[in-house]
Length: 113
Length: 109
Picture 1 (tube, each protein chain N blue to C red):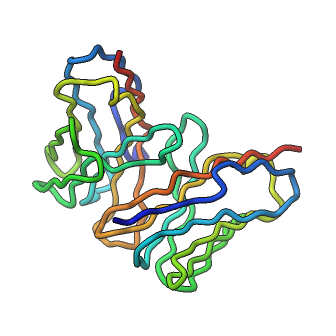
Picture 2: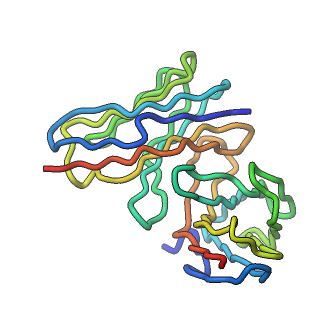
Picture 3: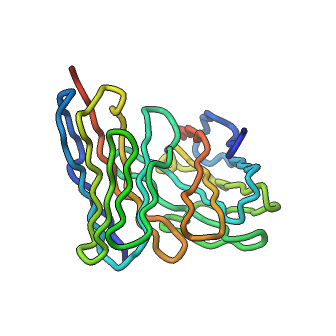
């Protein structure tokens, strides 16, 4: 009953370091999403992937890249981390049909010093 | 650009009381979702509202959608401490969700 699994759960980086956040889902969902959550701002979409092989920008894509490795996995990369990217990152997945909710992972808490 | 506003942002209420959280959005959409988030945890889906006039209930929570007014409400009946959490509405727009800023609910004895 894993659902959406994110790794790592916590990470501290120095400014300028790079890192990849991993996300995998076992529900055979076509769509996958990356969000960031900052205090008082709700969740904001960074990138999403409607199906294997496709990715699109969300509201706040600058400073990030993504890879939809296969149907199960969707990774988020910070090439050169900045303190403004300190946040909690959530991965989510959903069925292709529009009437299904997104299922969220437990989040990655990322601090950039 | 679709904007989603929730109010209140913070709600402190006594056990046994009723209250309503409001979610307004700025452009046409027929699909709205409510989620719950406990501190330090992930988001849990509560309700999926798919059409004008949709009403769904689960326990002490009831959600409704008025697409003409671009308004959804989450009504809490006879609140209990276990309902303390942050509640988010999210509106679907071209296969993406736009989230409100959340309503932090605290229920005290």
